[in-house]
Amino acid sequence: MLNEEPAAWPLIRRGTSFEDHFVGRVFEHHWGRTVHASDNIAFSTQTLAFNPVYFNRDAAVAAGHADEVINPLLVFGIVFGLSVEDLSEAGGPFLGADDVKFLRDVYPGTTLYASSTVVEARLSASRSDTGIVTWHTVGRDASGTPVIEFRRSNLVRTRENEVGGFPIPEGFAEDFRVGARFRHARTRTVTDLDLNGLTLLVMNSAPGHFSEHAMADTAYGERINFGGLTLALTVGLASQDTTGQAVCELGLDGVQFPVPVRRGDTIGAATEVVAVENLEDGDAVVTFRHLGINQGNEIVCRALRRVRVRTRSAQAE
View (cartoon, rainbow, N blue to C red):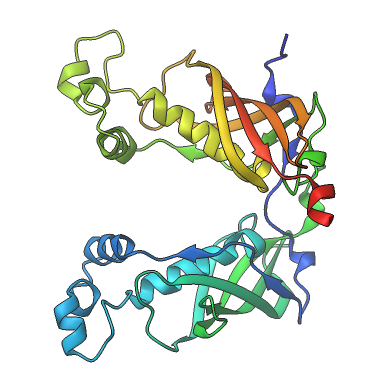
């Protein structure tokens, strides 16, 4: 029987410390992000960036562009975002940016990659547990051609305040020992957009998720999160630590929602490795038990998840 007290399980920490940022160190950020026209429309309209070359192909072509132009501030945001896990996720506030240069147009369908070099690092004069780090970040397309570059600075915590945790797995089958239990670092607060926007995005027509009036006289007294989104959030928060080398998802079982999720709840996740089955072709099937946990350490979701993942030995061969 699973001991469902995940608050005591070791944490897989994400992010880096001030001591990791010595001048000259280069970070090759491991993700890439393909930018779609829908990203550009949503970003430009939501930020009121009503320049027609960002959302009107005819206007963009008439201005000499090959297609609609990806809003440069979206390019900045994505390249910045690709760098955050390595540079500032566990740090502190974004202090500012300098020398932001948009080097060439980016068009829908472009995949962006990023790298950063530490150019300055010093301890804060006012906060002994924090340093100030500046990086030079370059965003490139799939051919390696730079499309943007900038310098940005952040507060970053020093390592002396860290405590031990679970080693970060690469995601190969060999990283998962049956019986291992760990918590995931990231959490996510459920917002009104989730209850309305995401529920309607998947065409769930139950008004209890998006109509306050429909729930006013119920035992809940307010809208509650669609269970499928609670499940997706639980699995999503666990994914980077469990499926970094995934081939495909195989299935779910034993999905339960013991406690409803409401707007304003903050959800985290924890995982137990249940089984690892090696396959003849060199891959493996790993079974995880995921737990979604709210801010009061109540379990809001349970699920068994089977994933086909690569093995490190097969990758080496």
